[in-house]
Image (cartoon, rainbow, N blue to C red; front, side):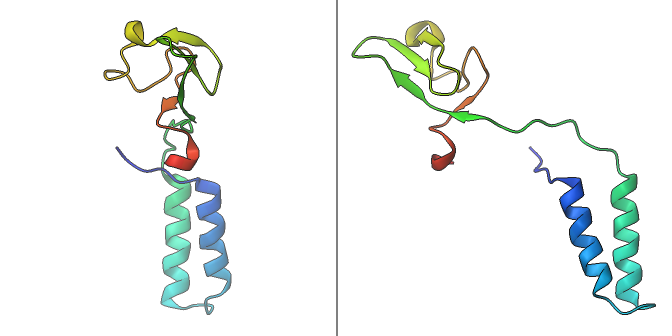
Length: 99
C-alpha cells in the first residue's frame, strides 16, 4: 500500500526551497518544475486511519472499542480475522502510541 503526504505541506516545502535558491539556477528550475508537477498530479482519495484498542468488559467475551465505545461479542466478531472495529472501522492495533 502506498504512503500518502499532504500536498499543501509538500508544496510549502518546495516553495521554501525555491525562495532559497539563486535566481536562474538549475536548482531553481528543478524546484519550480517539481512544484508545477505536484499541482498537476491528481489527488488520491484517502482518509486518515483511526487507531483504537479492543477492551475486555470484566471477564466475559464482551469487548468494546476504545474509540466509539460500541460493545461487541469477541467470538461473534472473531478478532483473529478482523482487526477493525465492526462499528466505526477503527484499526484495532492498540492505539496511536503502539503504532
